[in-house]
Image 1 (cartoon, rainbow, N blue to C red):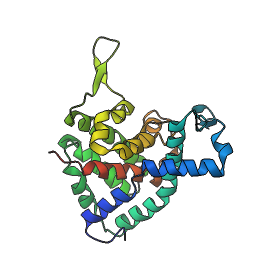
Image 2: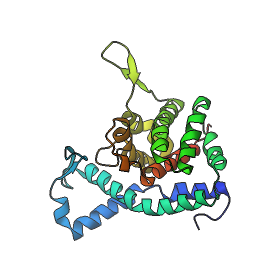
Image 3: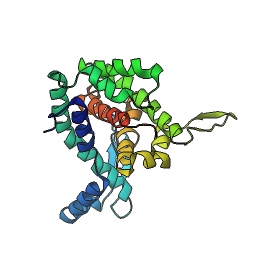
Length: 239
């Protein structure tokens, strides 16, 4: 079903099917809290690959948002098994060629023309299974695209710094902006925060760009979620 139809139709199905729904995650939490209440009564500590505590998730009553991000993160990991099967099928059998993938996203106003070659090289690296290169190339371009989106929607991407000038807001601040929610909706906003900037979630932007990731981190699971976000950005059009 997922790979049936025109390239454009297939990509739209992939987008819609793999966007997590906040209400579904909330329902799952409440059901789990009934069947395994102890898991939601005690704090959980998350560690990095060197054993350092990077985040704590409180009880369900005290830290619902933390539990929401954590459950969403678990759901994304499970879904990635199926997302990989679909991406592998459409790329290995030329159901979606590189140029068709590019054409889908390049029409969006959030991608500057001067950045398209970088994005193309990142996507090509994925098709060539060079995941290390693909992830390093595409994450900064995704971040830049969201800055462009915020500006196009009338938001502000700068903040004052301590030197008397201005600097760009962090990626997390960009994603949490109300303008992003207005354009993309609450489900996608939560998905993006969990995926890119929250330590209780995947936090892939910070882990990669701060040099925290080991070689085995650069996996199909990570790059295919980045590609999924590129496709979401590709659906944005100017009014």
